[in-house]
Amino acid sequence: MPIASIINICLGLLLAPLLLGIINKTKAFFAGRTGQPLFQAYLDIIKQLRKGVVYSQTTSLIFRAGPVIGLASVLIALAIVPLGGVAAPLAFSGDLLIFAYILGLMRFFTVLAALDTGSSFEGMGASREVLFSALAEPALLIGLAAIARETHAMSLSQMLPAVSFLSPEVVLVTVALLIVYLCENARIPFDDPNTHLELTMIHEVMVLDHSGPDFAFILYGSALKLWVLGLVIIGIVFPASSGSFWFISVISAIGGLFFLAVIVGIIESTMARLRLIRIPQLLVAAGSLSLFAFILVLR
Image (cartoon, rainbow, N blue to C red; front, side):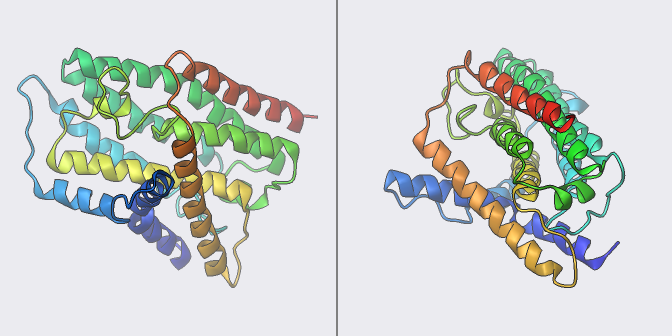
C-alpha cells in the first residue's frame, strides 16, 4: 500500500468531524450568532466515549451490532474512495458498486437496530429512511454508471481523475449527486439533524435509544459518511491526477471538501425543510438527472 494512500485515510479519519463544525459555523454566521465551537463534533464524540452504555431488555444482539457494523462499513468506503487523485488502498475494477452497496449496508443495520427496539416511534423513522434510500440509491448508482461510461473505467480511483467537468452530462451527475449527498447525510431540505420534533425526525429518531460509545460510533460514522460522499463530488468537480506533487492535489481536495461543507451550510441557512410528500419528488428528479446523463454518454 503506497504511503500516500495511508496518509489519505489518516486525513479522513482525523478531519471528517471538522466538516460538521464548518457547516454549523456557516449556519451560525448567516443567523448572526457565534455558534458552536469549530471542534464541537470532536468534543461530542469524546464525551459519548466516556459515558456508559444502557441497553433495553427488549433489544437483542442486532441493536448492539448496528453501530459497530455501520462504522466498519463507512471505514471500508473510506478505503475505496481516492483523495486528490491518489489511488485508494482498496481500489479495484468494479469498486464503485461495492462503494454504493457498502453504504447501503450501513443504512440497513441502522434501520435494523431501530426496529429491534420495538418502538413504533423509531419504526416510523426507519420506514421513512428506507423509502428515501430506495429513491436515492438509483440516482447514485446511475450517476456513477454515467461517469464510468464517460471515462471508460470501473474503479473510482480511475474514474474520478479522468472525468471532465466541462461536459454537460457530468454537470447533470454532479447536481444529482449533490441532492443525494444532502439526503444520505440527513441534511436540509430532507432532514434537520438538529430537530427534536417527533413528527419530522428521520435519521435522529432511529438512534434515540443508543448511548455511550455506541452513539459515539454513530456520530463518527455520520461524519465519515459526509467526508466519503463529499470526496466523490469533489473528485468530479475538481479532478486531479497523482504525481510527484500529489500532496498539492490532496490539499486542494481537502479545501474542496471544506468548501462543500460551506455550501451545505448556506443551503441549510437559506432553505426550509421540505414537506415529507415533496421529498420523493426531489429524489426522483435527482434520479432523472442521472438517467438523462447516462443517456447522453451513450450517444
